[in-house]
Amino acid sequence: MRIVVLTGAGLSAESGLATFRASDGLWEQHRVEDVATPQAFRRDPALVMRFYDARRAGAAAAQPNPAHQALARLSRQPGVTLITQNVDALLDRAGAQEVIHMHGRLDSALCGACGHRWPAPDRMPVGMACPSCSSPEARPDIVWFGEMPYHMDRIEAALDRADLFAAIGTSGNVYPAAGFVDIAAMNGAETVELNLAPTAPGRFDRVIEGPASRTVPEWVASLID
Image (tube, rainbow, N blue to C red; front, side, top):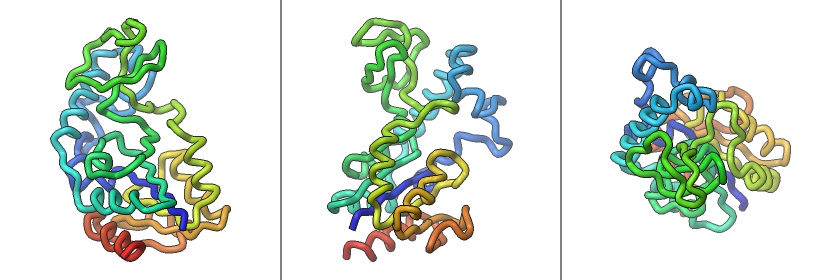
């Protein structure tokens, strides 16, 4: 069976990573959208770097939860493609194999000039030089609003041949990921959503409600045990 799994913020929420937004949707009185766009980086790079330094520290302190561990187990089965919208590395740290990070990674730096990637330091200064081309255009290796997600060719190829598509802890609001269920369904895949509550009534064949730390291990066990 060829399985494609898409994970979102709900997967890491029980590891404490759903709290970088305040209850009013602001981060230090700035909208998250205002520190997560190319325009924001050009306008105030120090603010953007500080935002991602804080997120990087939070992700580094977090630990994989049972849902990450269950998906790591699933990823070692043949025919499994594991895609995440999350920019933490908790799936990788849980032992998952070949995770597709479609929105980038907090622990990676990117050169805006030559495209070179390298491990991000705990704090990224504005104007940090690229170790490959020496250009002072280092930025977080994150897909910002308005940018194209990474690895879309690989993702679309996996969706085209999937027998089963699962969305875990996703909001169902961020495209193109929100449309993956439709692509998989059009190609004949069974579709299942695992979430605290349904996000797209009628679009999935099946919905499993509950916290990821409980539902994901049970679902994985039903597939491979």
